[in-house]
Amino acid sequence: MKANVYDQGRAPDVPQRNELGKPPSQKIKAPIKAGSARWLVAALLVLSAIPLAFGAVRLTELASGAEITPANARFFASPLPIVLHIVSASVYAILGAFQFASGFRRRWPGWHRAAGRLLVACGLLVGLSGLWMTLFYPRADGTGELLYALRLLFGSAMVVSIVLGFAAIRRGDVKQHRAWMMRGYALGLGAGTQVLTQLAGELIAGPPSELSRALLMGAGWVINLAVAEWAIRKRPAPPARTASAVVSPLQ
Image 1 (cartoon, rainbow, N blue to C red):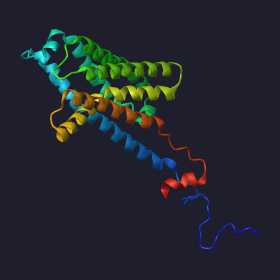
Image 2 (image 1 turned 90 degrees about the horizontal axis):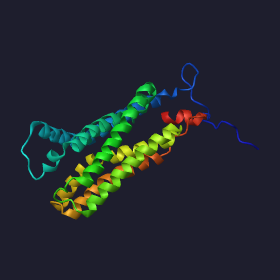
Image 3 (image 1 turned 45 degrees about the vertical axis):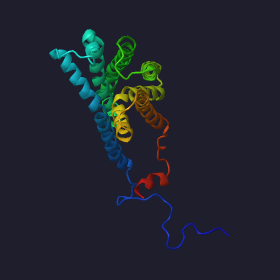
Image 4 (image 1 turned 135 degrees about the vertical axis):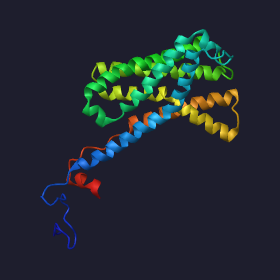
């Protein structure tokens, strides 16, 4: 014999309803997502703050005609690449952070598209100017073959990611566009994470050697890329279609 649908003393497994007899709204998720987006944007801006501050100091040196030293002589000899790199990186880091706010994108899709075009140009300038400086500027002290190769590798990967992301949106593939642009942004923000990896390495093991400096710099790019891949592959929660899905956020 079949069991009774309702067990004694147990609420029926039906959608919960409010005092008006309607299922509870799913809008409770919206403030949570908006709050998460704000924290993400803030975290990305903080991560980029230190390298952007160093960039501002470098621009000030070039503009004010600071004393030429072995450490900055290459920038005074050919200032255009470093100026383009710093200015484009600043726009790319700051403006790019707001592209991760999904509510912001939905509310102003026109702004998202216009900013995206500017970000593609700035991102390519960041990557290409970085590659030019790696190839043609005299190497700074402590830059060995490994770090030289890593800069070429990840700089090229950033440029390729942005090109693939732009190509994807041109053919209407939004999913691939987001994935490649996220990878490009993660690589572009490597300088921020490298500040943390080098600081941690110096606190643990003391002043870095040529090899350890290269490994710590490479770790900054790898960490950012790993986080981006995790975010890309993390599947979003399926839309609520059943009664249990509707009420589960309230439990």
